[in-house]
Image: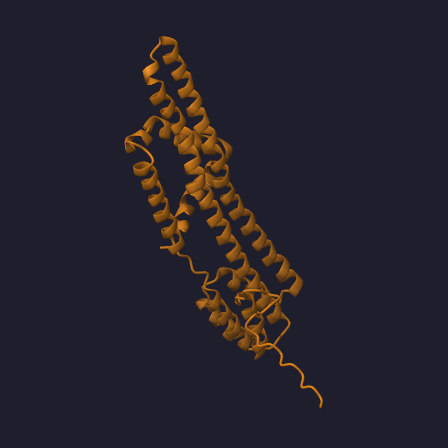
Length: 269
């Protein structure tokens, strides 16, 4: 389970409990099932109208990514590249082919296969770069669906509010002024539901998917660089050091506060 998601869910529950029990005389005043159903149904209906069915169904499966702690296995990929580069530098093509059976990363495996087939470096780069671009476009489109849902939810909340206001006007016309307050509260709840779902469900999922895509793209570009260095017959030690720079964590690329200050030059007597 992703710890940041757990923290977010816990904080959201605490927030809702505070809203329900400390800002209202009765928690039931924040419950309006028809309004909630209007927001949820309207949001999903508009989403299915906007996107093809296969894309929406694929995005539904991706919701599990938000709750799952996904390891990109970057260190393992670096070790695989270094191990394969040693065999490649030694001219042991058969050994490289045998090691491919144990390579977990299909992107890395495809690049090595192109290398074994004596494909030119620029052609390998073009093929792998196209796969990176395709993955980026597909996963950004998945995240965009949730961002679209985040715009639909408040809109349908406003529709529910307008419907509630129309019903309230009928009450005013009938002279039942004592129930105007409760009717107004029910009318505003749909907007509350729409904003809540947009900012606590749909937008966070979209951001989480976008961050996942960024991490996956970094890994794929690292693999692409490693294969490019292998095609140039660079030393395994150089390849390892270069690839480690992709995953090195620096607080600030331009300044390191942990470096000791340079001692002042001694003054000549």
